[in-house]
Structures are given as C-alpha cells and as structure tokens.
Image 1 (cartoon, rainbow, N blue to C red):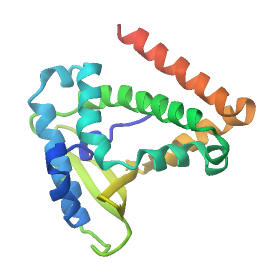
Image 2: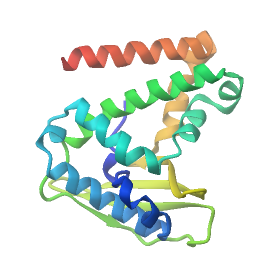
Image 3: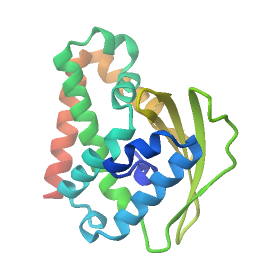
Image 4: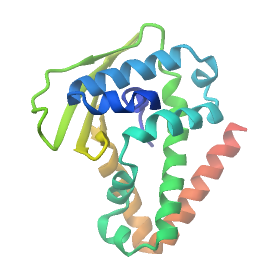
Length: 204
C-alpha cells in the first residue's frame, strides 16, 4: 500500500531549533543521516518492533511533519473542513497508525551500507515551499525519495513525500475517495480501524 519514506524524516527533539535554521536541503540531509544511524543501531527497530517505531515517530518524526496538513490533504479539504474536531483527531490517529505499520516493513530495508545522497537543490532557501530530492542507496537499486517542505512557524516541516515517482498524499487521496463517497468520514474511520486492527493481528 505504501513504500518506505521514513528515512528522511527523523531527528532528535533536542535539535529542532538547530534544524529550523537550516537550508531545506541541509535539513533533509541531516534528518536522513539521523534516521539511518538510529535504525542501524537498533535491532528491534530493524525487526519491526511497533512500540519502538511508535516511540521513534512520536519523539523524532512528528516535530518535523505538518501531519494535520498531510492528513487533511489525504482526506480532501472539503471533507476535512466539514469534519468535527473529534473526527479530525481520530483521522490523524488512524492515519498515523497506518503509516507507522508501513514503516515497520520499510525499516527492514535499511542495511549497514545504506546511505542517502542529495540531488542538486533547485529552489531557494527563502522560498516558503520547496521540493528536496534525494536518493537512498544500499545493496539494491537506488530509490528516489523527494520531499515537499513548508517553511512556517518552527522552521521546515514535511507535508508530502514522493517514493519512486509516487507522492504519498495524492496516492492516499485516491484510495480514500471511494470510501468517503460511500460512507463519509465515519466510513473512512471504520475502514482505517479495520486495516490497522488486521495489521496488528497479523503481526502478533
């Protein structure tokens, strides 16, 4: 359903202020190196330990992602705006769980030889929104990973990711659209809940 993209998202909370002052390409490079090093050092994460991955996401990923924007765009602005505060909170929680379980498989692909290389940056550090292109290199074929960033309060935030030519948010928008058309926001919440419970059961 979703290919790995966590490799450029992670950093420690203590470095948030420093990263906020960086140019966007340097910001992405440091995040990439941090997560690769963290995964290489933790065999439980490599094995797909969901509790470890959740901790990684909560403490290191989320401070650098505009997850509300990501979720609202995946759901669709009209549906999102008409949702209640409770529905919005549940949508973000279920969407996060869906992505975290995708991370579990993605992290197994991080090997001792894995590195992340930046491609030439074509934007300007003063831009409010930019795209940063990278390439993950390891034992197999390199995988293109591109990131859409916004520069607002708190520095650079990731709001979409492209894996091998496919943008994450539009991909989920297409998957969610027929579910929303048939059952609305509650229908989508029910479907996400089923998927997450099924994945949890398969792991246990």
